[in-house]
Image (cartoon, rainbow, N blue to C red):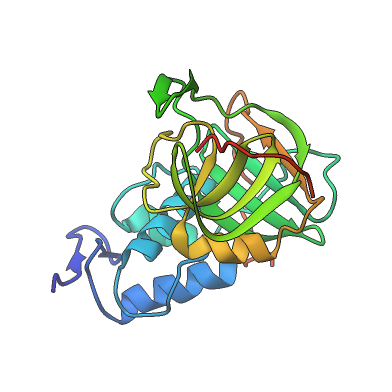
Length: 235
């Protein structure tokens, strides 16, 4: 297996997907404590940890990358305090940031889960007789219909889906790249889908925003802490 490298001008180890060791496990445990959902606790830089690192980097004003470099290590030692997207949001809610491609599930006013996502790519599509523009609309919504486990629709397979705007919802997917790539739904890494489903009952507010410019987050010295009818998913 690949071994962790060390940058010549820094005391921070440079870690990449596939690396193993105690330092990888420390990153995992740190991200887990901060609520970034890094998946199974192992000493390997696995795909779930990769997605969690992307989410953490984006939440801390860094470009998502397939490595943990000195800037990411510094952010891990002094992580940004997450700011709400909406000032009037209910204490328990889901916020979706289309600019940063981040989903944050809040519980009792605190971020419980922060996940990398992939939303609508803005392109025209036609698939199995369903045509449209792949857009994830902004607005204030509520979770209204939930489907557990795997389901299949005209636009593909999805895992633990929660619909909040007609046929648009968030769900687990095997393909969650670093860029918008869906038909309109919010794709979530598979390992976060069930946890997100469990913490988002019917009626939970869902706020979708596209901030004009990313704000510079304040630094914290320690971690802060049913509908009816046929649903045609816009995956």
